Image 1 (cartoon, rainbow, N blue to C red):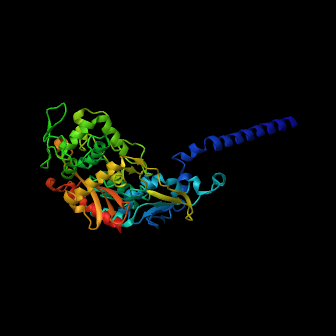
Image 2: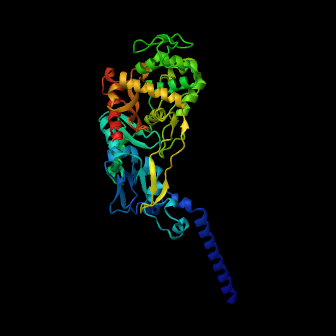
Image 3: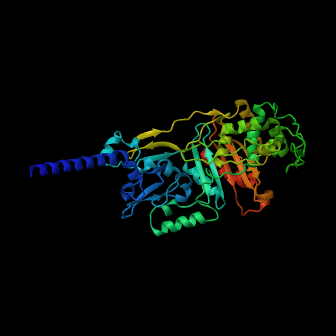
Length: 484
């Protein structure tokens, strides 16, 4: 009898040890797998069991949380959702997150280890920190000016403070209300299908995620390359560029929409946007020189984060001389996001120094104590200071005497460059209207803002689309808001 009891006790002890070993195995080695398993509803319920932290604009929250009373208790709410959707993105119980809601999800949901001094204690006690706050660099007046300026047209605006890289406005139209996607009801699924199936793609962030042929706005990059490489030493001297210009190695001849482009000076060619002059310069600089120049401005950079991911702007690294010439005027396969072209304008305004753009100023815990402050990131030279000063002169000339007159502001130094980018088969698509610019108050040393505007506007007559006519007035409104 005693022997049976001993055997039973030993077997029970063995089972207990096996149970403890299995528990340790699960806790140490498989916890993450169980936590991330879609069938684990506890994780989802914990995630939405408390209010989500706020995204702030100018110190005021533009997001909030609503108690739904359901198992997934708190749903996301948005103030002026359409206005700030290109900044915040959405946070959906069914479809996840996007933009800042995704990039700063750990802070907003309270799971980021920076929110507590002892992360291991939270893991041990299964406690959940309150969601923190994300302070953005957006300025409300500029955001509203950009959004209202675009109106019902498809397009985007990206505005940057040149010296610091702070993103001051980020607008994309048409927009949408991210609050429609917050919960988990049938209406959320219907809204998701409607928004994703819409022909005008309201959920596409055109400022960050859409690339366009930049057209003549890219001539800023080509001019910078020509001046830095010594291909042009005097912007007021005639160039060796015939009109029309025979593309190298082909029987095609490139012409101009403007008159007086034959052997025009760089300054005059920049003001009236002579394709022949800049295509000839691009071919003379060559593939390697043009690629290096474009990449200094940020083209082909697949690592750009603000902290949301930004679609890479493209300048091909394998082209024949004719393709290089076309790329130098913003055609062929050259494409850019509005943020990228705002970076081009910012580098010119900042004497050639390009500061990486950023959208988040600070991250705090729920009590407002900073856990991360975005520091001024080191700038890189996109061009020499002397080149930047000559480009500033040429961009001011465009606004004072050229196609950018509608961006002029009395008492303010404004530089700009228009662009009308053709696209589609045989260039039959409605051209995109570009305007990139910067503004500096006459009594200030530093420019207040640099920006890019693109307008798609397929509803407009083709002849009425131009960077100066469609995009420059929007830029002017945003610059005025910045100067206030």
